[in-house]
Length: 166
Image (cartoon, rainbow, N blue to C red; front, side):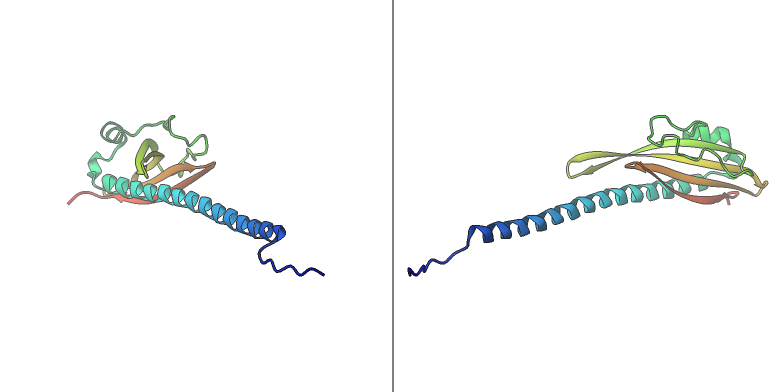
């Protein structure tokens, strides 16, 4: 009997090791893609929250005597129609609570540069206004920010009260 003193790996062992390594790398790739998608969705949510905060601050700075439909349309570019160039489709709830007097819309586009790539996030703002909440001392409004990520429509909102300035 001839004794074989060769050491090393067989072809089967190399194939099994390669298969195990491949499965691990594919799993890591899947986790990386999922992480990137969650990161982008969170960036859109953060931008929506900043837009809401800025919109609330701007609306609260308006004197109660100037807080009316015509001023909101002329000075702040709100419209009675949903902006057609913003990707919300027919998914936005176009109604307001029954005790609100009117609703207005405005479209925003926010540009972000991520790793040298310009991304455009589009938002639609819906403003429902109750001019007769507690006249002449108080008006109230609901502001809702809508955006689409993938096929799903997201929203964030707040109720604000407009009071006479000091």
